Length: 330
Image (cartoon, rainbow, N blue to C red; front, side, top):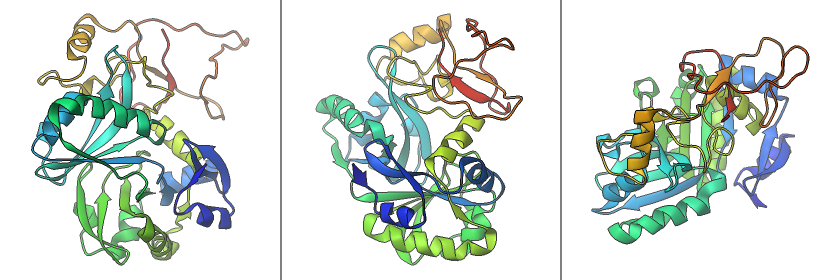
């Protein structure tokens, strides 16, 4: 079991630590409900340093990324990021990820912790054709997610750049918390606004401490992975291994908006046909009327406790609907 550079810090704060994706991670501090509300109403900080980072460089970097990802990375300019996925050859998804354009011929791919080795092998297989330079930075970099509606105000004193001017899915390389060069990215997995900070492992403790000093007047708190899951669930954001997996296509998962058929990519032809004819199953959503937190593999039952069978071809709820993702059903 690996530690992040902050695992001892979480333990000292009294976090409940659990194994997750091969790492010793904080699942909660004061309880999932309180932490969920902290992020929705104020500002909270997640240590998500278990995520993977691949640096793809060289004249053919874009060609490789275009081949292995579903979205159109040619639309990216320096300073912009893009949500995408890695389709496999059989109609499913290897992983979902974020692609950052760092320089003209340099991209950062941020992947899920549990899929680092699988993703690296998949991309490397296709890189035999393109021969782009690939570097796995996952062991050397840390990632903090500072999330919530008060994040901009609470963190503005930490940097010389105007945080309010960084648009959603844009980023800057700038000073932060006394460190000269970090990535400040207007992204996150909560739907509450905020930033994600990429830095080297030996810098993250300084950043963590200064973030909590700056955010003290705003009620900033550390947040665990349990609340991260409920926050993304409430927003209808996909979680790999739950709502999407190797057997779920991006069309079934409602990710047609990141599947661009104007370019060539892995399994394009089959996915294009699926979109044209309509998928046999779709990711659907539901709303909770009573207290409770839906978990993976929970049944949906009626008032008498009878398990409800899924309805085929139900449409996905729109992104603005207050609903929670349940999972894939045939």
